[in-house]
Length: 427
View 1 (cartoon, rainbow, N blue to C red):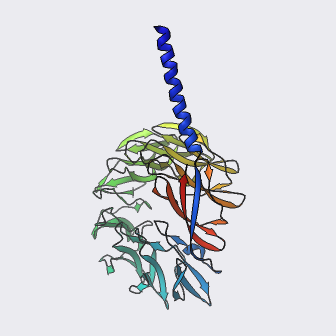
View 2 (view 1 turned 90 degrees about the horizontal axis):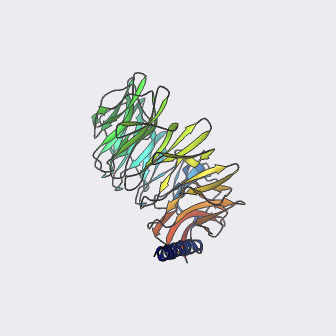
View 3 (view 1 turned 90 degrees about the vertical axis):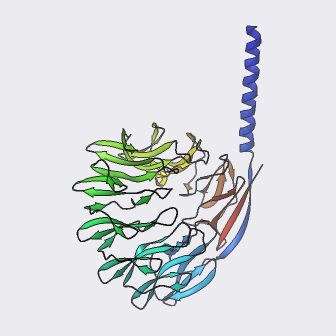
């Protein structure tokens, strides 16, 4: 009887191992098939700061200098010509159908949306924000020494000394707008035209709406200490806020990094937990049940997930972590000496000369991880162990987007042109 059970157990183990081996072989056996769609040639005189990719990675826009003027190009088509434009990236609406950029008329500035120019001002702020539904737009403008906010083409009532970096921002349902401003020597946040409490400072890029649009949070300076404000209520004071507040996708949890005297903390739903080092980046899994962060001490960085630290790395690229849609898998990029590699589920993958930032993405079924790598001055898409066609250059800011579990697309440069690439995963 005992022997029979042992044999049954061994048979079951062999079956499990065989299934695992078959699955690994299937993943390893994939190949990539690529089609390209030209989006126009690359002119000389292109202004690198203006190069902008639409959120859906289907459109590309930029400005280039010619005959002492600047010409705007969208998907290879030349649009209007200006004497000067803002030396910053343009802004596409989330649906990719609108293109906004700061332009000049004489010594005055305005924001152009699909070649329709708004009211003239003495200057335009850095941040031009579209609402998530692509129907609304907001930005800061300067009149003499005062800053005003323009929302949906209308001047808001307040007049301010400065606007906080990273604002204005819209709520996820596009119905609310918030921005941080300086009023005299004090700083405050304005939501839907209503001014909040004044503080000694507002943390840059900390003004955030919850995904369900019900809550607004931001970091503030009170005296010599910092705190996170949620719903108008200040949280615990800290020596510093090391990582801006982050909501879970289901809006049920809020986390941020903080320092209290010499102690490094991660604060989750108001509860302080000892962190491995100074917290620099936080991300929740799609289901909101898992939390990962990156902490830095000295010259080393540590990846932490579910409160369990990994080994220390020289660099974790761009302080970014990517969860799979099913929340079970996680990936990030590290530097090893002069090489880079992806770490997925704790395992280091093949090393490359470079791995392009913000290109790591899981397929909708969570089975595949894709990214753009570079070796020997050539760029290509990587999915598992499969490498796609090679291209001369990558487009800064381009990402990869899965349209289905076995198809993805992105933008790159090939033979003097910007091109859209469509990649099929074949087995």
